[in-house]
Image (tube, rainbow, N blue to C red; front, side, top):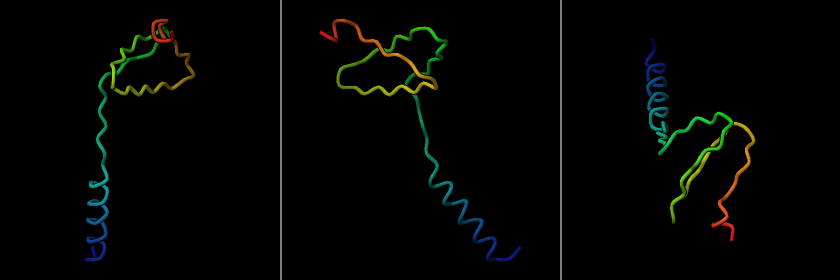
Length: 64
């Protein structure tokens, strides 16, 4: 293998390793088409990803 090819491969690996991002989840729930209770805390953001269209409901105490 040529020196240029080794340098190119090692540079590519270094770039890919440097760009690797780690994702972590606070909680993972499996949605089986039944309502999921997701606790919401004051001053804390919650992001929910669902792979289908869903309806979101809020308790009456939050809507008044």
